Amino acid sequence: MSSLEEAIACPVCHKTLINAPQDCNQCHSYFRNEVAKMPSSSLDLTPARVKGEIEDAADAKPLRTELFRLPIISFLYERILPPIWAMGLRNLGGIEIEFQQCVEFFGENLGIVADISCGTGIMARRLALLRQCEQILALDYSEAMLGQLQQQMQLDGILLSQITIIRGDIAALPFAANALDAVYSGAAMHCWPDAEQGIRNIYQALRSGGKLFATTFLQPLPSIVFRFFTLDELQQIAIAAGFQPDSVQVETHGVYAIIRCVK
Ligand SMILES: C[S@@+](CC[C@H](N)C(=O)[O-])C[C@H]1O[C@@H](n2cnc3c(N)ncnc32)[C@H](O)[C@@H]1O
Image (cartoon, rainbow, N blue to C red; front, side, top):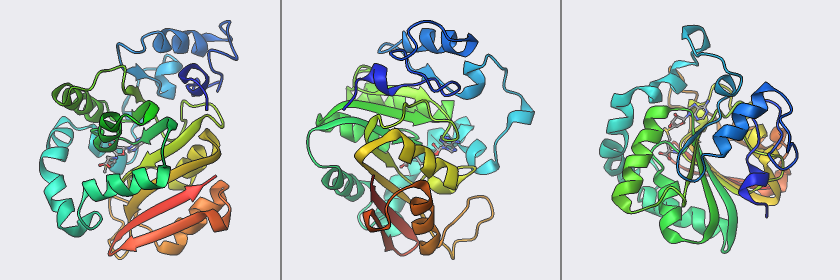
């Protein structure tokens, strides 16, 4: 189990504030200032920001990522989808069942748990209210989704000190290696530009014995905007990331898949 200062790393040079107490280069001085904002503000640890670059159209990611940056999508996301999920599209019984399954898999006395591609924080907020995690990190690429998360935290009475909110990119996670005790990544892999790279990065960030609970959707849903997987592909992605084959379990409910892995 590590502290937040040991877990959060610069996504460019991969150093934490602990192992680079002096500024190592330009990226790290931005990183230091950003981390100093904790716990009163969210952090932007996307590689472009850390490098001081201005995002422009040329930096746009695929539509399946960019869609979620639209304010209308983030506004409607949790207002529309949960009842549809509960009808069986996402797990049998919807998000509450998924929360129970996730908590059961993670076990008790959790240290640092990350909700990666947290969106509006459907799981991070439930974990915060459960009060069994030492630290909760909620990371997403979409500023709009993270804005909704902050609003919803206020409504739920969750303090900024209870969830560290990070704008980050699955392609360059701002976490040290072997730092996280558990990762939840719900309904996200099909939205990432590169799912193989994403699961590999999560594997690196998990400590030995750390757990990943991820969910996504399967073919025959057509991969037009999102990338949908076969069961075999999901297993291969987890194994290629580094998980041992016997510690990868994929469960399906129709076109919904739940992946449980232990590092
Ligand atoms: C369908 S939503 C899932 C939100 C939430 N986890 C849930 O369970 O409902 C997919 C999320 O993946 C995020 N995402 C897409 N591409 C990403 C990337 N490159 N890095 C981090 N998050 C990304 C989107 O911003 C969006 O919030």
